[in-house]
Every structure is written in structure tokens, then in C-alpha cells.
Image (cartoon, rainbow, N blue to C red; front, side, top):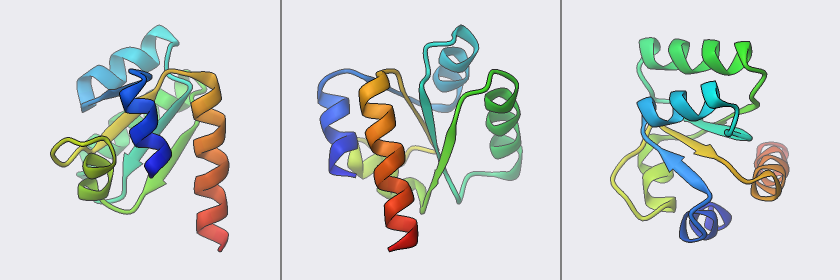
Length: 99
């Protein structure tokens, strides 16, 4: 999650449900991080949009961790708009799930 903070300081992420959906639709989002505790409606909307535009999605434990990682209040969704950050974050999130 510290890498996500670095990406935020480099201005390579977008947070907030509507802004994330806009970035996915525009094709700028390289990776979307979605909180597991997002509402069912929000999760479906973001997952459907990401599936349609072939944008990878990774789940994170909760909205508080996601918000804290970028130095803001709780966030349900974050889009990474830089290819390098997106690849490294996806790799690190996969490793953390498998220990």
C-alpha cells in the first residue's frame, strides 16, 4: 500500500467512484483497486465497466485501508493511470494474497 501512496504523490491515481468510472471509460485507467466492502451496486457498476473495457481489477480489504494509503478519507475505488505503477501494484497485491 505504500506504493499506492507514492503513486498518489506522483499524481498517477484517480479516486472516487464516478471519476474512476470516467477514467475506465476513457481508457486511461490501467488498474482499478476496489474495496471488498463496497456496496453491491457500486461493485457491480465498477466491475461491469472494467470488464467491458478490459481494465484489470484488484480487490483490497477495506475502504479505510485504501483511503489511508493515499492520505485521504475512506475510498471505495481507485484507478491507477500509470502503466508502471499498475503492473507493480498488481504484482504486489497478488503476492500478498498468496503470502
